[in-house]
Image 1: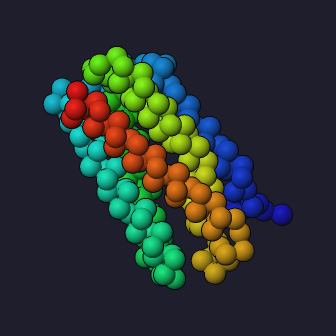
Image 2: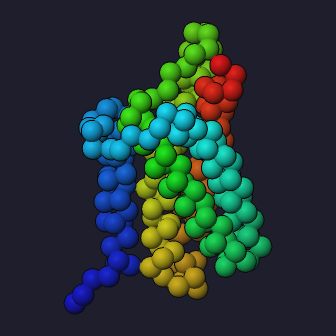
Length: 186
């Protein structure tokens, strides 16, 4: 008997999550050798946070659009919006990992009291939600690509998708606040 991806969604979710988190933590903790990565000009590295802010805002729009479309029964538009959201997330993540691998995490330049009571708590919740979202997003995505739309209602896709989209929206929104604190206000 030949097993298919549709029979291994939880296992594939776990594998993809482990690889993704290893890349993220490897970049943030400096475990990825910078010599393996081509260095872009300084202006490119400087532009990445600003590009990622635009990508985040676009992702917020596509997630909300996908949510509204599925509630209105427009599954095709929902699918397109959520695929666009996933692509935007991938673009964000690749750019973020590239910059962090080469330069390390950004340092907060504002007052220490704001760092302690505003920046760090917002950043912590943003990071926690981003980590929690990864397996949820892989799971609902893998369900969606391994089954016809007519079968998705019989899976956990709708329930987990609602949770994933909600947490994803909050994470992207908090990430935008982090951007404002790091690159606009201070």
